[in-house]
Image 1 (cartoon, rainbow, N blue to C red):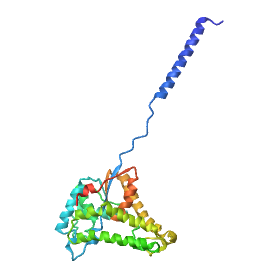
Image 2 (image 1 turned 45 degrees about the vertical axis):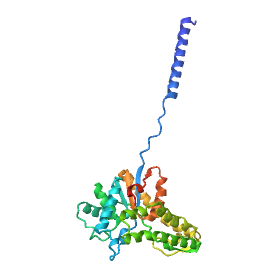
Image 3 (image 1 turned 45 degrees about the horizontal axis):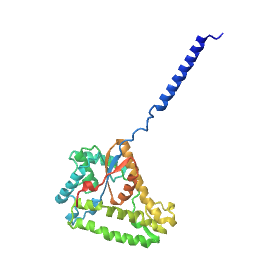
Image 4 (image 1 turned 120 degrees about the horizontal axis):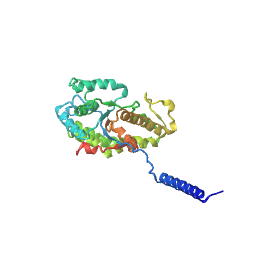
Length: 303
């Protein structure tokens, strides 16, 4: 026999269970969903292009010598400006295989036990800019991030449309020659020299010549070069093959830079490297979301 009281109790229990289930379902649906973890702040990188200062030196021309009191004072001005960037990592165009030697020299330099005036190659930007700025900032190490593969632009010498490359090379030399000439004549200072080398006209002009115009040359050959494996060169794409040799090196430099950042957690890197690499590296870093390119002009000052 079904009693009214029992039916009422069963109905109440069922209704209560239904309400509790709906409440749980609603709570689940309205619970905020956690978003992806916030990305770390991008690493800042300042790319400083510099011709090799030791190669500019001519024994009979004091204007070419960065060790003279005049040029040292000018370098000090450049260092004052770069110091405002406050890099916690300084990277130079030396092969990682030389890191141990560079470490030893840098420690001697920090202790005032290394005389750059007598050191072979002491005029190099590695020492005059990298070591000098690192010591000012109290950095423990200057990091070597270069990669093998350096070659001359002249190895691309024959092929269809080679005249386009040769004509563009002649125009580039006519445009760029006065930059070095003014420094060697004493008409420009080191800060002015670096400001010009890093200007968009110079960086993009050289990049276009080497990484764009060269690719228009086809059906030709490259001059023999120990850094280029001729067995892998397709003559039909000789210009593109030449560009790939240069770009391959830039990618390896990039890899060394980002590997150094991951190992040290540097947040503000300064790279000192040859001007030819700038356009390529700017393109690489500008598309890397983990990096933020810093405008070098802001730290080189007016001409």
